[in-house]
Amino acid sequence: MTYCVGLTLDRGIVMMSDTRTNAGVDNISVFKKMVNWEVPGERVISMMTSGNLATTQALVSILDERTKAPGERNPTLLDAPSMFQVATLVGKTLREIIGKTNKPGQSDGFRATLILGGQIAGSMPRLFKIYPEGNFIEAGDDTPFFQTGETKYGRPIIVRAYDPAMTFEEAIKLLLVSFDSTIKANLSVGLPIDVTVYEKDSLRVTQAFRITQEDEYFNVISNGWGNALKVAFSSLPDFTFDAPEPGDTAP
Image 1 (cartoon, rainbow, N blue to C red):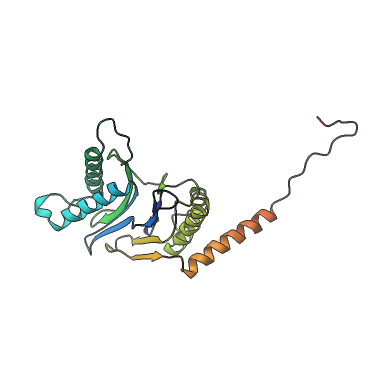
Image 2: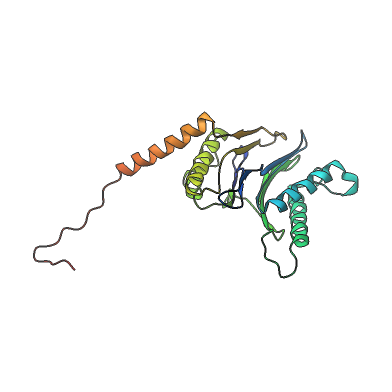
């Protein structure tokens, strides 16, 4: 399992993913699930992957290889004219990989889901969620963020606190709380956490970094959020059973 979030803001896009993969409680590994392609001043494309590791690694390898030999396959990620066409290209490639891997009658264990975001010069930043079938949906005012993987534990936090006007720093804090809650609830999600920040119209990766177990800020967030929940819970009014009326008998 995994956990990835792509968040749109007025200022740009923040993407965050964990790195844990596992095939059982005794077989846990770390694999990077985020990749960035960049032509400074012309385009930035970021992608996060969840699902079958062999499928997602094959996808990244094929997409990356095509950018290095564009004459053999056109368009590539680096010369597609719009983010919509980038999403179409990625979805088609994903569908082809899954189709070749899954034999007739075989289970769908080789499936994968992606979050793709970025900007190409002359257009606005865009964020997509791409499904194993190759189709996709786009983020907008009603759906300003996408999640993949183990989504249920961290979603309520984002829904309650998200504001499109928040700063990148506030967005990272929000997502780290979401990730901490997910990590606490599910052993299949874990650190390190990869982060990519893209500022609108900069046409370059603004920030890209990894948060590890030793990261002081993450530990402050984790401990602080736990303590804040206890304080908030204690401040709520206590539940009371209705006092029985004179003469009433317990059911």
